[in-house]
Image (cartoon, rainbow, N blue to C red; front, side, top):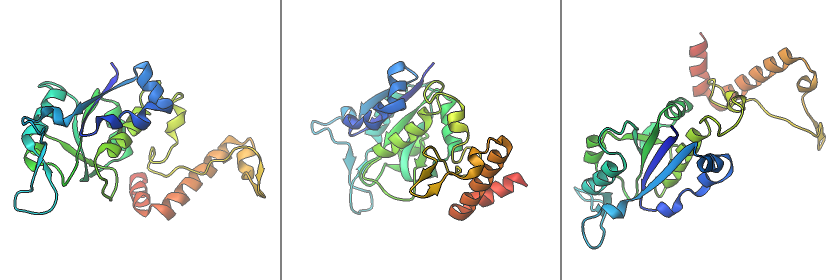
Length: 233
């Protein structure tokens, strides 16, 4: 059974967008995963197709209405649908490679793309939405964030990326950033490929890669380094 993604959005025309290109798009064409969009305004009940209202207590902006969003979620994921329901939100839990792997091992996901000032808290609680963030910044809406999550997940699905080794040594897979990569020509603008990589000694190559990965992680992501050291102890 393929990974089934359902996206609830005010802008269904944005999809598949980048998800329709390269290996991710080929996976969509071959059925390794499926993508269904649900236009939130289709679930509005008034002639103006209203999906938002002013914030309770005052303040700027608008908030997505709980009844309209709940109807969309219930349509996308009827009772008994085992897929996790995710809300892309800057206040959510940061997306990690570990969570990506968990999602890739499942049946799919229902993803809500927020807009305006956010989503009524009651529908988040009533429908058990898992809030996920792709970084400490704010976007105009959740569509691009949903694409980031889906690309990270879909590339791990069987048959999408190709050889398993293609992603086993990537950043975050083992708690470290990825080591530097090189290819021909051997000399580029006076810079040579490190001699160890063309030595033919696979043991030395592996040690060099591990040392470089550790050094990069220690310098650029000290919080990852501390977590990795704790796991290794």
